[in-house]
Length: 218
Image (tube, rainbow, N blue to C red; front, side, top):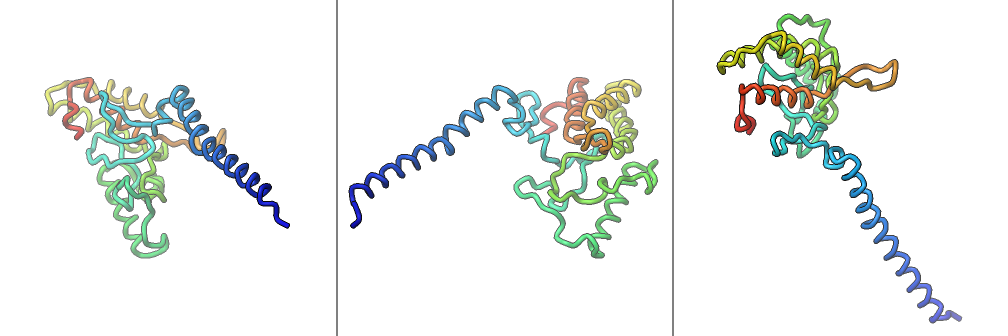
């Protein structure tokens, strides 16, 4: 015969345990973890935000389009850097559509960097990333872009009435590359740089030298 009192007791115990677990797993632990993360590494906890003069312009973890010659270019994006939805190209990598897109990306890279030969261009610089928002480019790709970036910064400064020494600009850009440089695997891994870090560094440099102001970033 079923003992109703025992069933009631078990049901109450189960409910109490469930409520405690839900509170712990769904509220207490996440809250404590977030609090610790906020104090230990505020930048990462908040999504590694790009903060320029108190205004947030995105995240260092999500690539954006930089349509100026004085910026380093991120990997091509099949979603046009739409940060509301990541994704790879709809066509298969071995189709004519994919090949034509890659050829178009190669032409664009060569036009922006006329002193670069096809054999020098890393595949990642002309092929879409799986997410369409990959902020990292190969170190070798950044080094190919560096001469164009330096010359463009000097030209932009001159147009805005600021005389910048090319060696100073070259040293600044080189320092940004070296500070951002990381290896994807210890000792034997390939080096890459975060293009968002590079371009935000350039923005700060341009603002510090009175070449652009914050309103031009909107």
